[in-house]
Length: 306
Image 1: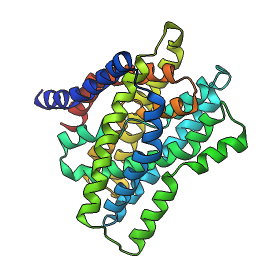
Image 2 (image 1 turned 120 degrees about the horizontal axis):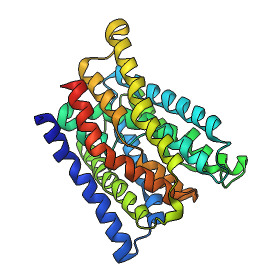
Image 3 (image 1 turned 90 degrees about the horizontal axis):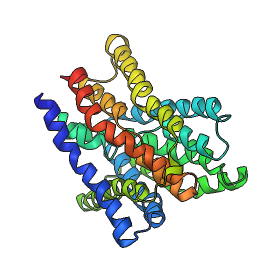
């Protein structure tokens, strides 16, 4: 019960940020499109750089983004091929995007810190990195195809800065370059803003929802992927690693499971907004998953990690 209460209190501020985003739209006409571009092209690449540089001393950690990238891509493609006959307005594409990722940064980080402490920071950074690479390659391309040709969609993918920043960070790590504390502090400032704007954009999207944006089939499939499929996969991975492979320790197992339990990704709202593919519909389902997670995560974590 104590663990449930601690997590519940840690998660509440995230909902306050969503509410502030809603108020910002209704009262001050804040534009979510401009904020989504700031996140995509400035703040997210800074997080990729920070996470990659921080993980260079732990080689096992670099398996984490590979695992999350492969699992996210696989779930995305499976959902796309299963649901593409059900919708023809881009919904099937954003559903596939959402199926392969989760709110590992904004939501997963405070939960991991509450349970594991600062030891979780590098793991969360690598999980975020793996899903950012997924979001900015395969997932972005699939959503872009809703409104663009193949060549235009590929062009948009190559204009994203994330992979270039990741490559630069890997080169710096290879040559054992360690930035100064001031550089890390500067990049840490981006993390705070990224976290804040990311949660507020859900509220900005909710403020524009109309009854026509409600799609219960879309919501049901998305929530099933996030709260059933993802935890089941990672419980299987943890079981196999504990009994056969022995690659990760218990701390990493706990962090991986928590990150599999998080709600739907805020990034899906950001990219749906940027590409103009059902952003209100996506914001509604992401908000619903975030509301469910207020109880789902504390209960699940208490059961599996007590």
